[in-house]
Image: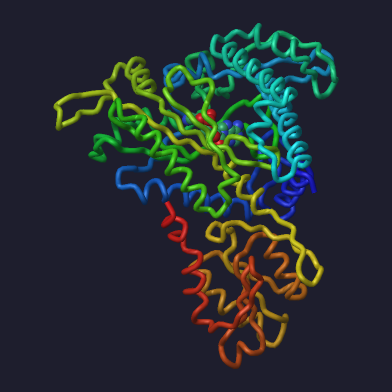
Length: 512
Ligand code: GAP
């Protein structure tokens, strides 16, 4: 199965089992908006809870807030979003399709990179064990030519973006012969900027004064509460403020399922530090966030750091944690050193001082900020795409299993009476009534027990317990573990402790 097929399977699996539905489906859907179903919302809540606890509960100097989505419109002027939260867009005159010009160029660059990788793979096969890939890459004429081309486009592209030179962005597209994937032609309009913020009207005022924006990031809600939290929480620098919540962006190219949506959820943390110490904290948060991802049990090879080539004007360092989705390595989380830009801007626009008083030096200053910003939906997709696996079993049969990190699984225990009679359903409910006080359980009595195991595998349930005739004799049940499929008999009185011990969130938190 190739990656494209895999991705299609993940999307249909997510729908079939109640993880994710297209929004407004009975009205044929709404582009790039999705709803989380009965299992998806549980998984999403569990991911959010894990992030929140790892930030707020594990760090004495980080507190959490929940700011409103609607904010004073001047905030978006101050933050630069009104003037510069733009994507360069371009239309193909024949297909009438609209694209992000930067994405067209990035995809073109990825194709050149693919060509290099193919040459290296071919040579590795040809030369066998003696193959020296570094030597090959630096000397093979064809690879060197591709590499030079790649570098020169990258440099020119970064310069054009930095200087907001949209004419040159178009020239790159033309000179590289980039064609519209739909019409196949190179008949392009000029490149122009498009602001990604959604706006609406507040109250009964319908002129510009009543226009407010749906927040495109949760971070600004943190910046404008800096003083409130610092004063009321008696915070000492360095300290952080975390929050999770919805953000909205009118994405031009919204594709790849829940990877890029118009309404999505962010989990952000702004860490306020003394100016001059930001690089130390930037490195600290890079390492800390990497550990968080690895604690999920997903192999390290699925992640990589990608330092920004084009730094935003306010940042002095920025990196992305990329994840290998079925459509390649893509940004999952951003870690940015944002200097004192945001607080300074809000001081300027609000006329209020947003400063920290250092009682040791008797000095006031505007703190610098290191931010960690991760998409909840993208984390969901990363976990789902890693978890999806089709396995061949020893007896030749196949099973589909979602290897979701067990602590995050939507349903922790499935309670299954072996048959639908002989008092087993009643006994199963009796046991479930106790277990459900501790965790999410699901009762299932339909079909053979084997088929029920498969259904639970397909939604990632770590444990199934089966009630049978012996349960009435010695008060034991069979417990089956998802990944190993091993079964053992345990007393009913031990189920809760066993499951709690294995699936307590502290099993993840302790790896932070
Ligand atoms: N405050 C910084 C900030 O918002 P960003 O890189 O624009 O930075 C942070 O966004 C994270 O939010 C991304 O790494 C991604 O995981 C998520 N994200 C951004 N746009 C998204 C979209 N349209 N759909 C889903 N997730 C998105």
